[in-house]
Image (cartoon, rainbow, N blue to C red):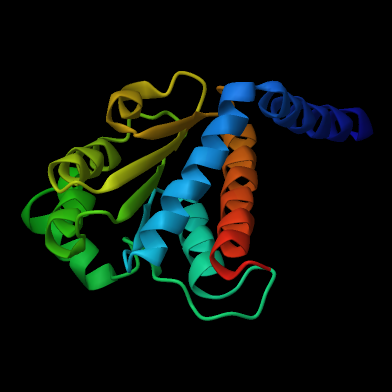
Amino acid sequence: MKDLIRSIISASVSVKEQILRDEQMVADMERAVGMIVTAIQAGKRLWFCGNGGSAADAQHLAAEFSGRFYTDRRALPAEALHCNSSYLTAVANDYGYDVVYARLVEGITGEGDVLIGLSTSGNSVNIVKAFEAARARKVHTIGLTGATGGTMKQWSDILFNVPSSDTPRIQESHIMIGHILCQLAEEGIFRT
């Protein structure tokens, strides 16, 4: 069992080392931070969406922005779109689960906001439709996916396609990328 534990840890480290060596991904993190800082300084909002474990990660990252990360500072306008269970179940029942996020994007986002979507496959229909709606509303999109980027690739202004097809390794890297974006955005906004 110890060998298996070491193998799992090694696989996680390997994915992160590939990200570390990927100059484009590092440059995209810098671009994403700039996009987030510019949006917040202009009075815009951050929105997050995902399914299952990725929904939990979306909520986690929204909380890092709206609560605090490293510094005591004012709350930043960030929210995970799935947190209203009455809305989610009503729209899923009345219209279908594929549009639960797109309808919120249409209803509550504004031009210049940033939508961050997490999908390990990059093919989650409800997130793809949310990104389509975001483009129509001139909302910036940041996609976090697995290796191929899936369908989200064509709808993401910035795409972080983690070099793995293993869901747990992808999700671990999504949280790492999200924490980097939060830390650097916090520093950029509050000049700590």
